[in-house]
Image 1: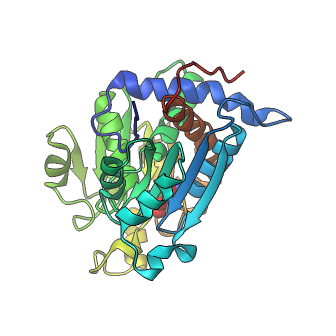
Image 2 (image 1 turned 30 degrees about the horizontal axis):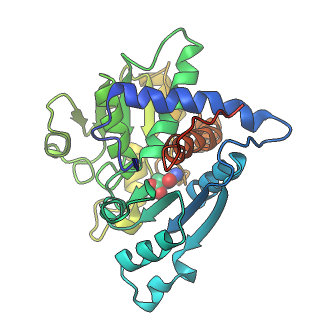
Length: 322
Ligand code: NCD
């Protein structure tokens, strides 16, 4: 049976932990001198990116290669989409070459879901669709938090997590919020009303348990985890903030604010960062920041996702990755 990873919404707690446990077992491969295991030898992974990407694309590509799969990257600039081909034709053309996994990023919400409905032999992984979901980013954030809180003798549950900034346009926030709600964590959304509408949480997640704060200080109070989000200017067709200077005066996550209101918190950011807008340099480079670990963990998480999906495609045997 062909399996997909299209979003975090709908995944059970045990499915989330399955991805994280598998990712944990792959972390060590990237620390070896020879960073390669034969696990997916003979499998083909196509990374088709209809939107620009630096870290996600390179992370999937490296992940596939470390598993010994054959990987190819198709980006919009060099594909037939520019010549007017429909998404369905592009996807079917790629499937005709028999890849095992199609990793897709697209500016339209739902594009990978659409593709998955027409593919019978290929697993689809959503690498970010519009403002909808970015499941592997949520999983790598969780792996990073899990590693950090293990050093404090805590697990991933019972955490207070605050998302600061452009929640409205963030697929990273949506995927992560689903994950934290499934884990039973306290979720707060912090930002101006235009970017974090009061009724947003109820509408998007169907729960009253997500609290909205328009005041940064109040929202930060007592948080364990601060998720700083990039201002998604490319997705904002209207003006959601008067200007970026005004925005950063009120909502930039700075060491001064964290020291005062969330002194024990750690900070993550999916990248790319706008230093001085949503996060200050002293936080990004300071001791609370787990941003570099997030990128490192991105490879292990994508290895886990590719492994769990690709081995089910036409596989009759379990393949170890030792
Ligand atoms: C994010 C994305 O593209 O959704 N970046 C990423 O994948 N690391 C977040 C962003 O663009 O702000």
